[in-house]
Image (cartoon, rainbow, N blue to C red; front, side, top):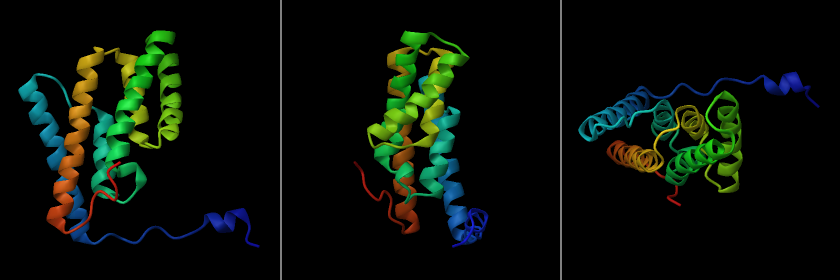
Length: 166
């Protein structure tokens, strides 16, 4: 039986085809620029760091459960709600942010919407205490936009995304 250290040794993933790299990069850039453009029109920021990480998953690893629309949209919204719930109990601050980030993972797992970037959304909510309805509606809009651009990019590249919707 191999030792634990022997089983931890493996090889790195295969190098992606240059076309796959170019497609994922261009789709990601397009989606994030669309968030900035729409945010500019609405006079509201739509680009928050967790959404850049979400787009990296959608464009770069579209087959993962973390990248599916259910997880991108649901995970982001559930994590934001978790952050708002923690705000009610603990108030804003670093201790509440840490609690919200950890609890968001449990909420997403229980709801079958795993999306690691969304845990950071719970942290942002708890640290910044944004207006509830406007933050949730803008987050929903931004998350749906990322999925739509990922869908369009996959179709243009001849790939299938998503693997499932809900």
